[in-house]
Each structure stands twice: as structure tokens, then as C-alpha cells.
Length: 194
Image (cartoon, rainbow, N blue to C red):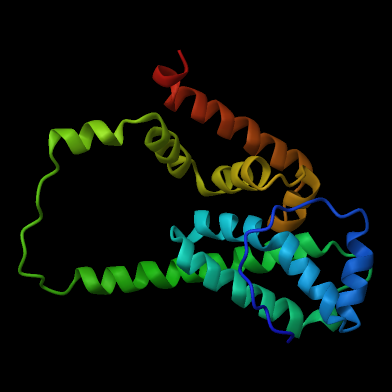
């Protein structure tokens, strides 16, 4: 795999010929892969961070996704969309990481700690009700499918068609999840929206 030396957060820009770029990557062209990394790094890390809950872990997940993408480059179908493939790999690795992390936390919670949990202060409770924290809480409270559709569409700018391909569901199902997610957020954040 060509070295991925920079984790610079480059703003993604839509590429008019994603399939041609993928074909160049499939042929082993390192510069095409580097372009793919630069265009997709920041959005993929943002997406993975929503899944795993930590930016450092998200960067590791995306790095692994890019390695797998490169290693399996010859297997990708011609005319496939590189972004859809990258998001699918990132999603699968992120979900696996989250499951492993949950298992580690369950095992750790069974160990005696010897410490008493400190109750939250009223100031901490008030801080939690800030608008940004309320939005994040509302997003996290969404059912997993709705949350994922919302994140892919609103935070990563993916089309319903790409989301449907990544999640292996139909485009109308994506639209239904998005509509329900927005309605849930509207209800949860009504005091902040008035």
C-alpha cells in the first residue's frame, strides 16, 4: 500500500468521475489512491467518530478501512463508486470496533473498583442542557438505523441512493428513516427550537 503520510483534514469536493478514479486505484496507481484519501479522509473520520464515539479511534478505523480498500482494490467492480465502498468498509469496521469496545466495558464493569461514583453537580446538569449537548443527545437517542441515515445524509452529505447502497436498504426506506429521524429530533429539541 502506498504510504498515507498525512491525516490532514482536506475539505471533500465532489469528483465528477469517481468511477474513473476507482479504475485508476484498481490498476494500482498510488497517486489516485492518495487523491481518494485526501478527498474522503475528513468525512470518513467524522462518520466513524459518530459510530465509535471517539475521534482517535475513528482515525484508526478509517486508516484500517483505507488499508483494506487498497488491499482489495482489484476486487471492486468497474463503475462502482469509491465513496460507497469506503463508507461501507468504514461502517462495518466501526460497528465491529463499537461491539468490541462494549464487550471490554462490560468485562471491566464486572471488576471491583473500590471507588464510589461522585454524583453530578447542578452546574454539570445545567451544562448538559446546552443546545449542542441536547442535539447530540437527541441524535444518540435515535434508533440506530435512523441515526445512521441522518449522519450519512446531513453530516456527510451522501445521497439517499448512496446511503441505500451502503446500508443495503431501499431508497424509500432511507427516505422514511430520514423523515422519522427529523420528526424525532423536532420533538426532542422543541424547547430549543421555539
